[in-house]
Amino acid sequence: MFHRESGVFKTTYGADMALFPLPVARWTVLAMAAVFIVLVPLTVGEYYVSIINLILIAVVGALGLNILVGYTGQISIGHGAFMSVGAYTAANLITRLDAPFWLALPAGGAMAALVGALVGIPSLRIKGLYLAIATLAAQLIIEWTINHVPWISGGIQASIEVPRPTFFGVQLRSQVQLYLFLMAFVVIAIVATMNLMRSRIGRAFIAIRDQDIAAEIIGIDIFRYKLWAFAISSFYAGVTGVLYTYYLGIANYEQFQIGVSIDYLAMIIIGGLGSVLGSIFGAIFVTLLPIATRWILEGVGGFFFSQADLLNIIPNLRLILFGGLIIVFLALEPEGLARLWRNIVSYFRVWPFSY
Amino acid sequence: MSAAADRTGASPGEVQLAVAGVSKHFGGVRAVEDVSIAVRQGEILSVIGPNGAGKTTLLNMISGFFHPGTGSITLEGRNITHAPPSRVAALGIARTFQNIALFSGMTVLDNVMLGRHVHMKAGVLASFVYWGWARREEIAHRARAEEVLEFLQLQDIRKQPTGALAYGLRKRVELARALALEPKILLLDEPMAGMNQEEKQDVARYILDANRLWGTTIILIEHDMAVVMDISDRVAVFERGRKIADGSPDGVQRDPAVIHAYLGTARTLREAAE
Image 1 (cartoon, rainbow over the protein chains, first blue to last red):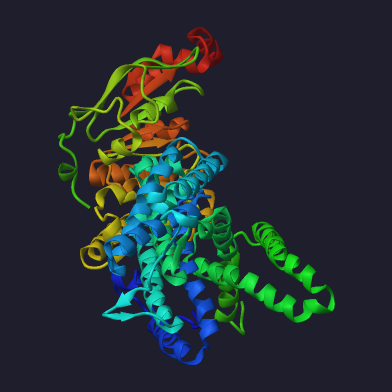
Image 2: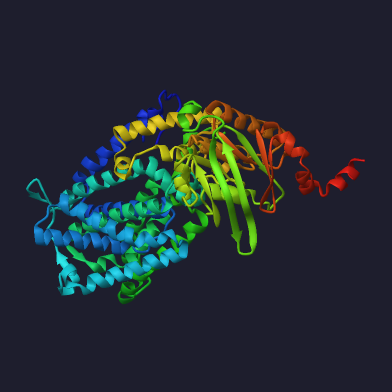
């Protein structure tokens, strides 16, 4: 990341294929781990930790969506709904059966994966815009179903209250405890995604994105792998939904409406399609954007607008910024923030002699 | 890589791929009409003919993109007439395309590793974990991929994305990906199109080497007659969807039907010669 790789020679294929092939990169990762696991909880205030927690949850979802959209080249506008499938599955398990988090999380993910794979079935025949509409339909159908089946949604206002997870008998009450809990899943999600994308299955996904005919000719069963991509991606979405539910203390379908699907698409487009780092950047950026605009407008907006106008402007400005940024990134830097980051790194890699 | 005997069930000279009475019509167009070819283990068979003669359609039917309207295709006694392309690949038939079909976002190495896909077993869970045997499998197949890269002299560009490579190199990477599959039969659709004489010689050498080293059966579509006559064991000539000749390069060149198809009537040829 922040290093130059001269003078390191690899003598085995295994060494060449490691995630972090250079010792200095491994130290960087360890140092970052120390900062995030020790320093952040000790120094950052409760409110800011709660914002970081939102980012952590978004990272898991963005990684999942990027596997489907960025790596496999399929589109989904239904990820908000897949999150709600995970959320309500877990909420029901937790409230009815008293399920612990290590059961509720994978169960929520698995149910979302099942629904996601079902929604992915049309992807064999339809592509692009048509697939987008099919997944959009899934979003609306799932929303409607949850809202209208009290057995799933718990009846009143379609919301189920859920207690915070318990870890070795200790209930996670503070934001810092929740932060460490979420961070563990983020690390697992990042490492799992990186592993997936450098192995047989991940290569098959990228092959389908780049050239589906050639993928078939070298023996990749396209239908099966597209379904896997939908299932894996939706599993991440389901887990994201469960994490949201734990974070908010409530499962509510309003948290997973179509706007959320669009937000996550914005994350991976702005962050960088087909990039793990891009998913992280995008999650940070899109989560912070509305918070930052609110801070700024509350700070200086009073000089230009009345208080009543501000209440109107803040949520709408967020939408305008979103739309604008997506267009800017699609037009100017389709590979997103991750590409900008790589450009900066490669500039300093050869600095000061860039020839 | 393994010797020919390990790779295929058939011994040299035995019929490995039997195309029997195959026809394919697109609407009113008879792209391929009642074609039969017996491809023998270890031979280099060239398919030639004017544009639109049905050569590529034949390859597409063998590799499973199209399924013939009538007739059957049999690989080592197994009926693959209606098998999908991924199944045909798993059974040991690899191919390259007339218009290069590489995965342009991936490196040369990853493209070649995808050629190993059918030989690898790691599933989704093993891929997530990437530890123990999944990692060992990946390393073992990396070694195989490196052998192919070495064979085609691609080592120095193994980490470059294929989208940025020159045309001749991309053709070679596509060949590498097909060879990484360790195919029993390799289908090559105009592997030398758009190349200069030197590059053509290189490709011809790779084809001959692959054939001799690993006993790979090769079915080749090519328009450069000098190359075809030099490297082929057998030549099949197509015209308007039908096979009009099939035999040794020398025999085919003297065949009046072939001369007719390529140069007009035999009479005009004689007149032209005079």
